[in-house]
Image (cartoon, helix red, strand yellow):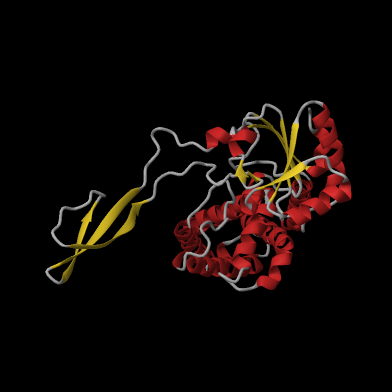
Amino acid sequence: MKLLVGIARIFVGILFIISGFIKLNDPIGFSFKLQEYFGAEVLNLEFLIPFALVIAIILVVFELVLGVMLIIGYLPKFTMWSLLLMILFFTFLTFYSAYFNKVTDCGCFGDAMPLTPWQSFTKDVILLVLILILFFNQKMITPILVPASHRWVIFLAFMLSFLFGYHVLMHLPFFDFRAYKVGNNILEEMELPPDAKKAEYEYRWKFLQDGEEIVIINKGAYPQVKGEYIGVETVTISEGDVPAVHDFIIMHNDQDVTLELLNEPKLLLIVAYNLRSTELEGFKAVKRLASKAQAKGYKVVGLTSSGKELQQELIAKFNLTLDFYTSDETTLKTIVRANPGILILNRGTITQKVHWFDADEIQL
């Protein structure tokens, strides 16, 4: 039993540290996931949505530090109760989400390792079993360091976590696991490789024959059946692969201009997914950068999901010399974790991407 407790202790501790660090690398992304959970479709706690980012940071720092506490054996009773309550809550949440198909990705490991709801629930069940083993064998969780050093280790873990979180909030995630990372070509990411798995469908044809309804099931060919055709139902047998980028559409004056923009050799994109919540201070830096870029032959475009009225208000307020095009808000949130964020593209390839706070670092 002591060996099992030791293995469970290390495994759970490391998993909590890794999970916490990955989410801390992208707290804004995790806050978007929390907003989904807080919404009316899942927990119906919409009053918490404005505080999602603060809650996200507190949760991931606590998760990471709990992993450290478990490994070094600091305050085992508090640690085990915290781990147990946390895993019980998230096991319920992932089961609810999976069973009712509310949230398609739990966000447990951010974009580094997307999990389906059922995969996430399975992971939580395994963790629950391991944590229960530890919970009922707390006496075997002994310190591995000198007890006097424990507080300093935990203090250091807290401070480093908050400093790292502050850094990525003021800049961008240190590790970018999304399809829109620097070096990727969006046009290529929109295509599937030749060996991609194709979706499989089953067709259920309904006919009225001799006064009775019959169903013919096949892979798609219209069945040669004597009788009156009623209809056909398409059932997905297995999902096919989808491109890494499958929802990137840019509209301007009711026209799809996605390919036109992605073929520009010198393109500066100012991404502000929502102009109501955008950081207005950032547009002072945007204006300076846009003027420099236009002088060097760049096409400068703003991307937002907000309507014309808000666009014109912002352009007038900062005397911007650019047009806003529109795209899906979720897509824009995925592209860059800043509002506004800045990208440089060369024929669809992302060569630079920064938070507005680092606008002066853009090389034109």
